[in-house]
Length: 436
Image (cartoon, rainbow, N blue to C red):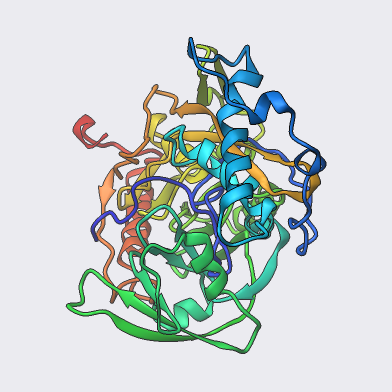
């Protein structure tokens, strides 16, 4: 399957439609306050105040203003603000929208796909993966492509039942063309009350023409950890996100599986768009005994390493980590550490390629939030996976027939690796360096 996303992160929403924090996104671990869903229309007090004359009248420029001279620097902005209020044909103006647009444009000027503005509704939606459930179709999506793009459907979701596949592009919703429509607006149109139907027009790489898919929305429960013992005696754990409860749920699952004395463990990170950086370190620590899990490098030259905590439950058992194009951000931290230390095999397809860390900052007066890229992160061996992703040790292509049905070829290969390791008495991969 071709690589269909150019950045990280997604996150899950209810298409599970999650915004860039998770597909994106790797959060620095801030706990975000909840918003009143109806908030965001209030006008900030400073906008309602009369504008200083010195800001309205644009002085003749003699030198470029600097950040040390904010009055001069922002004089053109306030001049433009006053002009549109005085002259624009359609009055009155929507001042909160103008304010939000100004913030959005400022952050877009930084040229970083992962830095941006979220209006109050977008910000509320971005918190959904940590809240546990909502109403929609249940899919992880990429919001940074030309069209809203499916990263993967959630297991048991309406999106899965309707046959939506990774790489599917939503080019129309209920017959309305989505060309040029921001992904967050597309998300809002896809979400809706439980029991209602949304018709998505899908463009798929393997199909000559776009086609319609009808999906009945439902209440989506967001699983964080699923686990079971496979018939071959192999333990299987699937992580769908890296949230507040993920590590606790993972440790409970590990205790139950390890009590069954499994041949090995499979950690399935396919379609996992990421989450909290701290959760990624803690998950990695369950499988890696010691050493650096990742390092953050900041714009001022500082570097901050994160270490394994030495208290893991599955430090010796043979391990396979499944990844694909939907494995992003925090998933790549775990997979990269496993690969660099030779702790287990990576099986599947090249990962998403999101190697940056964001902080989220809620704005005053329930005016949304901004997310700002604060650092790049690197694997224990100093690799950056930004844009390139992680190449699996053993590549197994996604096929429509093989995933997620019982004949899952990637899972089958993982099981066979662990069975072979048991027969050979091996606990770690023995691969040619070129495969790294």
